[in-house]
Amino acid sequence: MNAPSSSPRRRTPAPPREEVLAAAMEMIAERGLEKLTMAALGREVGMSSGHLLYYFRSKDELLLETLEWSEGRLGAERGRLLSRPVPARERLDAYVDLYVPDGHRDPHWTLWLEVWNRSQNADDAARARQAAIEGAWHRDLVALLAEGVSRGEFRAIDPDRFAARLRALLDGFSIHVAIGLRGTDRDQVLRHVREFLAESLG
Image (tube, rainbow, N blue to C red; front, side, top):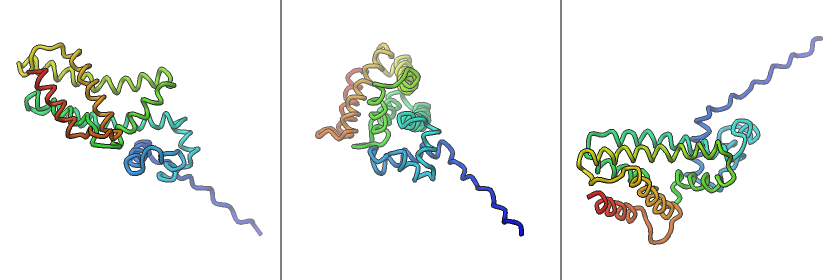
């Protein structure tokens, strides 16, 4: 009597990389960054933590790729806002509105802070990828300021220098909002920044 032939094991296909990154971002939004472990994310997407490590090599890499994915979405939204046929100042306000966190524990800013905290021990390649994220925001802001100056909407400024200072201001305020510092909420920050822009750009 012939032994029954065993059917070959079916491999469960791994979810697309973007699906894993979206799930990681959703977990940060719903449960906080401290709950995002390789094991928990694996359960969420139907993969083992070992399988995830095979794809991402480390949690640091997973976090950086998730940030890059989130930044890609923000970049598309930023491009849409900045290409509208409206005055430069209106688009500058939209840029600021997109930049500043939605509130305490904003998932994108929570992730951003964690990645930058870990960057103290990051290699040069990871640092270059983080710099690319910052560079995209900076270039768009410089171009917008230069356009506003050329059209006479803003007073004569050095767009690159002004952009560096404005983003430092936005980063400081945004960190306060993201960590929930008492007395610093999103509406207050937006008022501060708009007053600064009115005073500085004329």
